[in-house]
Image: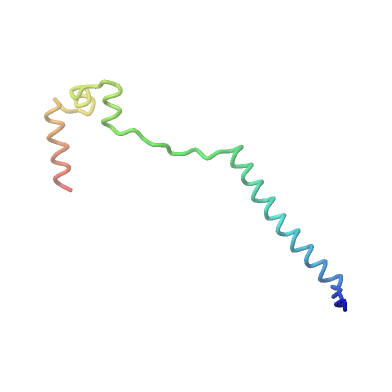
Length: 88
């Protein structure tokens, strides 16, 4: 014997469709945000170069760095840096 079909009310069918509509609207919003992110990428900080790497790539001598920082020579600069490290 065949089972009787349950007929849903128009309100139930309408509520189900509205639920589906809301779900797809949310999906569309997410996709639009992704499109916007592609069109307007964030500027990343990137990886900054270390001081040692910059100096070696540009072939700058310790004496040139010391004079640029206001030290008389590289030994004086090295001593000042070591003293600063010890104070921490």
